[in-house]
Amino acid sequence: MTAVEFCGISFKNPVIAASGTVGFGRELSEYIELSRLGGISTKGLTLEPRTGNKGRRIHETPSGLMNSIGLQNPGVQGFIDQEWPFLMDKDLVTLVNLGGGTVEDYVTGASLLEKIEAPIIELNISCPNVKEGGMAFGLQCAPASIVVEAVRSVTTKKLVVKLSPNAENIREMAEACVEAGADALSLVNTFNALAIDIRSRRPVFDNVTAGLSGPAIKPIALRMVYEVCRTVKVPVIGMGGIMTAEDAIEYIMAGAHLIQVGSATFRKPETALEIAEGIALFMEREGIKDLEEIRGAIWR
Image 1 (tube, rainbow, N blue to C red):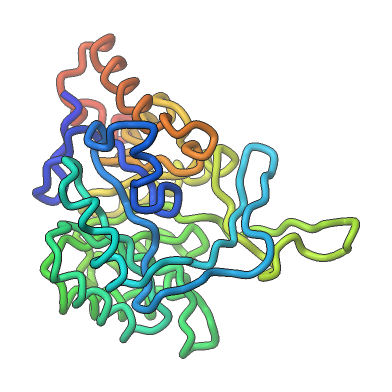
Image 2 (cartoon, rainbow, N blue to C red):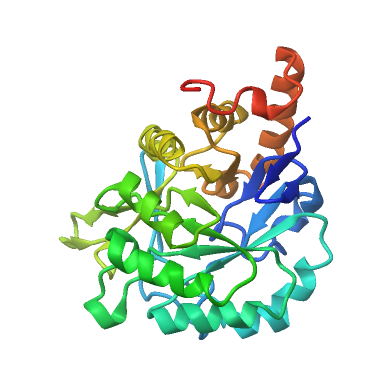
């Protein structure tokens, strides 16, 4: 069976629609029945509404996609009022992706989310710390630990910390977040990247750098998931360049409990569902009764 138990929560299959690629599910629901997925991770939320970055926001690269959206979102309360009523009746697990510019923002946002029954917060620690010169919380262990511990103290929900591949040491970061109270980890977020318009002789994006996702990052992301799964004892959600069921199975064999599908959805909205179906077909062909049989297969 493709069902997965994750932090005491039952997912009907291991496939989650990744944060930032499906909004809050409304648009994707026009293409697929959301309840056929294991879960959905919401668009990244901040305490206050954000309009996002100016200038160009999306740029295609060979085998990849760069984005500089800037966490455009309705704010935590806006999500609770406007978007949660749509998701709350869907038969899938909702992960609420939460970011912030200060520790206080994270804490207040997490406290507000206690009002709703979404079972999981996916904590985005790749956000710039505006009180410390703009360095992202998720680059060094000390600031990451502070924000994770602070959110842990105010939420009863399962806390999944989303790791940045730009961290100084991904294994040490994973250990620090677990020690600070993470119930599980998800990785990787986008890689910091640069594109230049040679005609204007300027960066493509107003913010100069942007986040790279898509098939180009998969081998590196897969290696990081493998390293983290071997380092910590909590469950891991793997992501980065997953386009097919075979890609997803690789992440599970590296040790991931669940996987997220992101950029592939832009190419074909039905991809996440096709991957879930492909995993089930693979299990049937290989005589696999439970994904636990192949989880971490390359190192267990």
